[in-house]
Length: 220
Ligand code: SF4
Image (cartoon, rainbow, N blue to C red; front, top):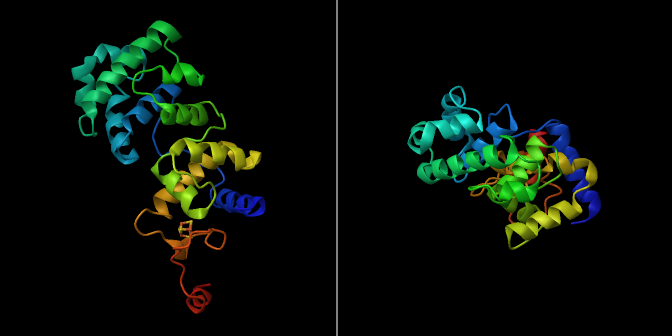
């Protein structure tokens, strides 16, 4: 894909949603960290339902540690893999208290050293809590990047690196959210909504499901 097309894609995504953000509910970097760890293989909606109960009771590392593994599990048991997530979060909170003054570190290495925090989670925290131009490639971004031709790649890391290299600087902070939301609501896995897609004419996906021209004209 050429640079002009790439620029136009992000210009349109920005025009449609100038201030994109995560759909996870949080008020502090720590709450975001908890929510992102819980969101692995779970929906943001499901995580929000659980954290709406959890955060009023415990929204600091000390308070989560005080709940204990069983106590925390009780709040998050509607979420997949909740037992291992509770174990990881308690261990991560202990590390935050002991090593980071109960604050979420803004460095990749320190984040990835926390139990339950991998590269993708660290990227989300660095981007969304600390405003760094990282690219957390999840299933949606991986699909959109490959389909559209924005950043084709066989692995998540390849796509991440290509996106970071090719997205114009002015879009880099928010690109992660635009691509996730586009994948979640428009360029869906089984049935992409190409007829409603604002970048359909720029997308290089050979399997695009674009309505025939006369129909588009009638709609427009
Ligand atoms: S045109 Fe279709 S395949 Fe291309 S980005 Fe839009 S929804 Fe996805």
